[in-house]
Image (cartoon, rainbow, N blue to C red; front, side):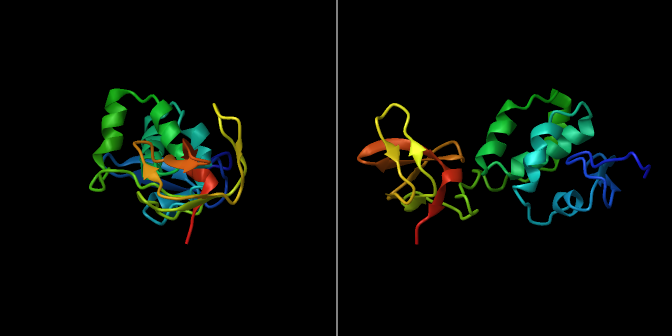
Length: 176
């Protein structure tokens, strides 16, 4: 690797190596943090905030790796939103989808700690939230019982002060 090389995903400069992207064996430069996760190690959602920039790369191989990672992280609100916004040429999108396992039809809905949520669970707010369209603030520590999941894995529906509202999962933790 040349001294000016950087990771194609996070721009790190340490422990760089070439990774052959499965299904087409195209090379991409990855760092020591990104590569193990791309190869199947558990994903650290906080590390992958870097995809908000690299997903827009003009390099098809980078777009494919970014799309596959975002697809895996679609339970995270920010990743689902970025995946919806992302424009990729049809042939590149088909390549990205070649190695994706969709056996789990629906993305999992997880709280701020990565705990899976299901219909009927109870959650606690981890910060004060101004409720749009209503004249109140949902306070940190508020218990929301009997939640309902929707189509967007980044949102749940619940009642606060007898008002049905949508809450972002990043501001919730599952109640015991």
